Length: 84
Image (tube, rainbow, N blue to C red):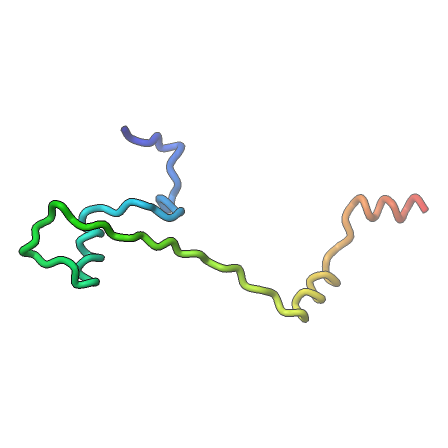
C-alpha cells in the first residue's frame, strides 16, 4: 500500500526505524566481520538497531539572563499594570 502525497513528510521518515533492509543488515554484518559473500543473503543473523538520542544543549547563565531581560511583557501583564 502506498502513502497519499498529502500524508508524506518532505524529509522522509525522521524517527528511528527498528527494522533494517537486507542490504543494510549485510553492511552492518560486514562491518562487524560476521558475514562474508560466501555466506549468502538468506538466513542472516539478527542485527541490533541502536537508537540515536540527541540531547538538547544547555544555555549558559549569561544567555539566560539576557533572554529574560530582553523578553517583552505579555499582553495580560500589560493589562494588569494599566488597571492599577
